[in-house]
Length: 97
Image 1 (cartoon, helix red, strand yellow):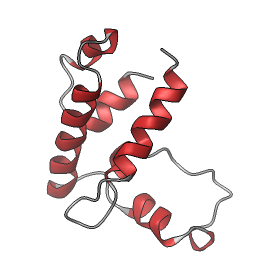
Image 2 (image 1 turned 135 degrees about the vertical axis):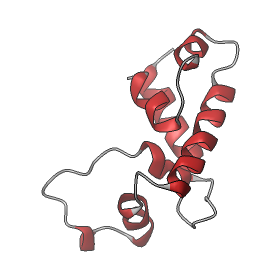
Image 3 (image 1 turned 30 degrees about the vertical axis):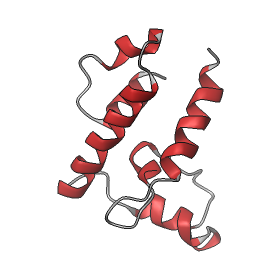
């Protein structure tokens, strides 16, 4: 399977699901912005994604939800083994890279 294609599809899927905090779940697996990108140059949705904290109670809940969704997306594939000992969505996504 083409990892880049799968990664993009997973990100788009998570971007379509809004957490209780109002931030798309894609924030859990977000990639850091280039250093030359200014926050005010980003649209409101992207600002929300990149300013959401990657720690704390809400993040932990969202991260577990992301992990559950990623596991479901990988059922019955070779990638399923990647998630055996993973405890969070962020960890699961970055360990697969």
